[in-house]
Image 1 (cartoon, rainbow, N blue to C red):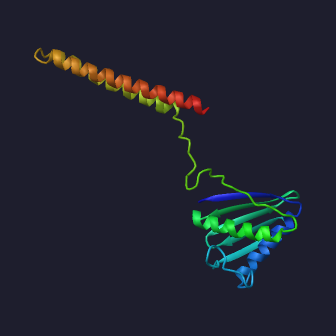
Image 2 (cartoon, rainbow, N blue to C red; image 1 turned 30 degrees about the vertical axis):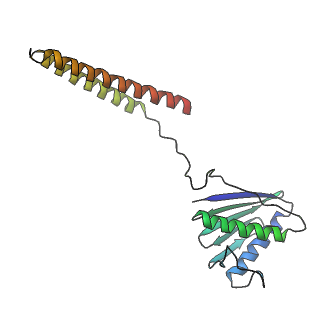
Image 3 (cartoon, one colour; image 1 turned 90 degrees about the vertical axis):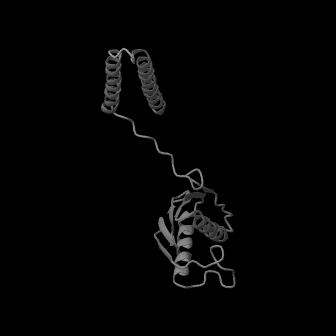
Amino acid sequence: MPTAEARVTTERASRYLVQLCRHAGQMGHGFPAHPGRGPHMGGERPKNVKAEWSETDGTITVDGGTCVLRATPEALTLRIEAQDEDQMQRIQAVLTRNLTRMSRRDNLTVDWSRPDATIGATPATVPPRRGRHTVLGLTVAGILVVAVHVGLVAGVLTLPQWASLSANVILVGVLVKAALIAAHVWRRRRASAKAH
């Protein structure tokens, strides 16, 4: 879900919170928000608008998006969560326009930031660390693979017609697998050290 946040510095945060929520609540009850002005939300008036508020906290729900408002003595904070990017931008536009209009005397500006950093991206997740038991299990599996290969080499070496060629092929296979396991363990330890 895309999110956006804004922190508007003002000593009248509670007043603006109540005004924004009351305005949204009137839209939800079918009152025209701006008689004689164009439609809202990028071409169509929102269908489902609900607002709840107190002097310090408020929530506005609009067609699949939610804005949580909080008033402190020094600022009004707004946080939007929407179903998609288009909905997010429409809610941002409406809130910015309404707050700017309501605060003409105070000349407030609303600057939105994106805590999710990249539009449409999901936050990166850190892969879980492998426990000691997992590393020990991988080591034992590697040793068993080598032992099986060495056993095959010993078995093939007893057959004189295959001894030379088979021994060389199996030995190369064992060395390649051992090198791959060692490289894998080394990369994991290095990545784990960087993460911590």
